[in-house]
Amino acid sequence: MLELAVGTGAVFKKLREHVGDKGMAAGLDLARRMLTVTQRRARHALLVQADARCLPFATDSFDILWSSYFLDLVPTEELTVVLKEFHGVLRPGGRLLLVEFSKEGG
Image 1 (tube, rainbow, N blue to C red):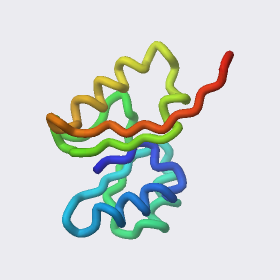
Image 2: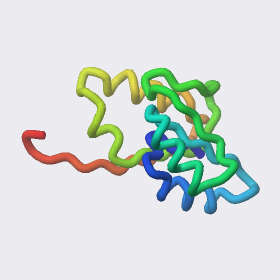
Image 3: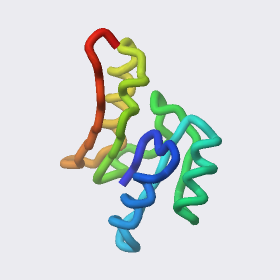
């Protein structure tokens, strides 16, 4: 499982617990500060500082990619690049889980 834009790590901690010892959970964020906060919540986690436009993982690495409230921050002209990166790291048949909130005019 990969969570993009882990933020403060509240969701990442729960997702990591759900995966348990049988799977691997990785978290990614562009902001070093967010990774530091997440590390406090989910000790010994695989956390990576990187840009979602160029994910540092091999093709077909994850069964699940989770992202919440991240795509709302991506400029419209960069959405295709980011979604292609998401697709690239997901295994065939993998699941992309997105939680987003948009408002009219925003």
